[in-house]
Image (cartoon, rainbow, N blue to C red; front, side, top):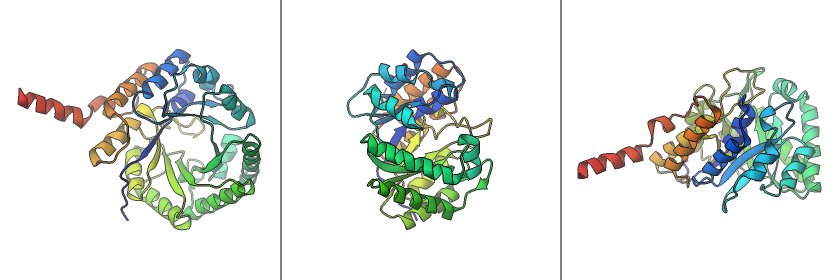
Length: 323
């Protein structure tokens, strides 16, 4: 089945994904510089920081300062990440973020034990407590997420039926607090997805829950990010998390080569060439990607920031022919 969307939503996660993963230290001012640059590209959602324990994630020790420092632009949602009530309270106290709740569980119990020292049953109970926390703080919840939905470096392949079942568990849990779930994010946390696997899982989820929107969070450790995004689009997926210049990775993935999300400018370039709208100015995004590389001080995996856009090349060719 091919069901390409006419437009996709790009959720930029580079500042959070990248700066929690980079060894650094990266000056706060430079993090803010990148966020402000991304705000000029046409992106309408940017995840700027995570409110987590700095002992576990040193790169987020200055999250409060970063959130206080960037320039908010109208029409852009600025989001954050948190894992518990303390983190949520910090996000709310900032007064500068668009705070919406999400319920998340991990499909791999072995990874869950490595990452958060929980069993699957404990994970469900913890999320039930988080749902109550959102209710208490009047935070809306319409999104759920399944981490390691495609596979795990510790456990191997994840059965499709298991993921579909977990989605049902989260929907029922949300209903207990009168939340209506409208979107499910399938996260390829450790880059096990392939185009065939994406189509298989997205197809199963669409079949079981046809009214749910589906988002994909795709990591590029094995170079499949763009191919998997295209496969998702063929299945009608129109919401993608991405990371400028390919910043980031998963600190707990158990893989030294763990890469960040699918690269934002590469995703936008592909969509531009396919006639799929993103609302993003690719040339400005390339500037931001090159800035990201300068900020971290080492090469990043993005391709289009080096090769440039074909639109720019075509314009140069036309200009040369006219002269």
